[in-house]
Length: 318
Figure (cartoon, rainbow, N blue to C red):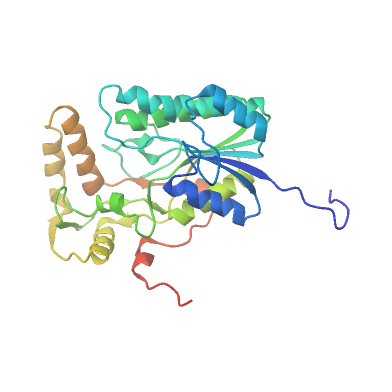
C-alpha cells in the first residue's frame, strides 16, 4: 500500500564489509548512487568508514547492533596471499569463520538480507566440462577455495529469516585490472601469448560493473540462494589472448592445437607437492577453462552489460 502523497521514502541502509578493496570501493559507491545509505567498513579505520575485523566476533556484533542495516554485503576476505605454515587457518578465520560471525550478528540485529561474495574457485579446476550450474558438485582446491566453500555452507545453514544470496563470480576484470585475466593468455613466466586453435577452451569472466550491478540487485530482493555471475557468454581463449596482447602491446605468440592440450596437462599432474598444485592451477587456467551457467541469474532479471574487448575501445568523448 502506498503512503501519503509527499511522504518521505525511508532510506535503506547497507553495511558493506571489505569496502576498502578493489570491488568494495566501487560497490559502496554504486549503492550510494542507487540511493542507499552506506556504512563502508574496511579492515582498518579509514576516511570512508569504520574499521572492522570480521574475525573478531565481538566487534562484528557491536557494529551490527549499532547500525542495524537493511542489508549486509560481505566482501571481507583474504584472497590468494602467499601464506606459510598456518595458511589454512588464516584463510578460514576470515573467509569462513568471519562469515559465521556476520551471519550470527545479522540475525541478532534482525537484518533481513545478506549478500555474500564467494568465488567460482569452489568448483575446482581439473575435470570440469561444460557450463557448470550452481548445483554442480564443489571440488575446492587449496585453503582459499576451501574456506570459501565452508562459508557457503554457513550461508545455506543460516536461519531462513535471514535471506542469504551467495554470488560466485569468476575472475573479475576492470580497466587497469587484468593481471588475473592474463593467466588465461600468457605462457607462465613469459611475455609470450598462447593461442589454442581448433576447439579452444572457454573461460567465464565478469567485469567489475557487472558484479556490482548484480550485488545491488541481490540486496534489493532476488530469491535467496547461489548465483553464478558472469559477463554472460564465455570467452574463447584466443579472444582473451587477443585482448590482453593488444592492451600490453605484445604480439609474440605460440599456437597450440586443442588436440595437444592433454599433453601439458598430463605433465602438470606429475609435479609433486605445493609447487605441483600451482603448476596444475596455471595449466588448467590457461588450457582447460571454466565455464559457468548463468541462467539462474538471468531468470532473476540480471542482464550483463559490457565485454572484455570494451577495454580496447576509446573512452567516450566528454
